[in-house]
Length: 291
Image (tube, rainbow, N blue to C red):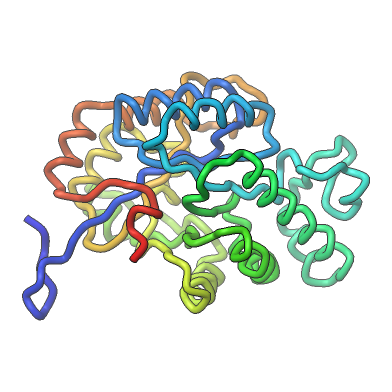
């Protein structure tokens, strides 16, 4: 049964189940396709400059019901623009820097770094547009868009490129404790206040944002029991549950310690499908829930 609000109206549960890092590797792309065809995955976030991005786009074109968005990459991965155009943002190997703290300070202090990042963000939006895929949503690798400077750039550049929905990474710990008895999840992000600010700015810009996000505290460890339990305790409103599935680990760019195959199993498990049905939630992409 869906809960009711104070005025007696039934509150609808709406759910987006997302895979991040679409395009990172063939193992990730195959898992996204399987989880959508056989399981509960409804959306995927594309890394447009990653090694397997072309394969991801080809799969997405074969899956018109899969809602695809842009996974902006501003740290720890491959840029769209040549490294020579991003001297303040890349390391000696031509990859975007790994030191998020130092990079965040540089973006706050150095106008030239901000100009370089603006150009890179614009290039990623334009690369996504070139795929011809509808833009369902936008989020960012490592949730780096909660940085106030980056948030401003994403909001300014994204709207003209068709951005209508944005992930705001805020997770209700009470839901986690109800889903897993004895759980004592700590803060998933030490940037939680910045996430709240991002939410206010995104809503003022007219963007759709989820009421809550699941997958932060247990990132890389969204096991079948956890996903089924979270679905059984799904709150009212719009929730995004995000994951990192792959058919196996051991590929370039993987996150150390992530249980990729277990997360794929969670998305395709009969228990997850049953829990979703019992929740009564409407499953889709962000675009399906725009007013």
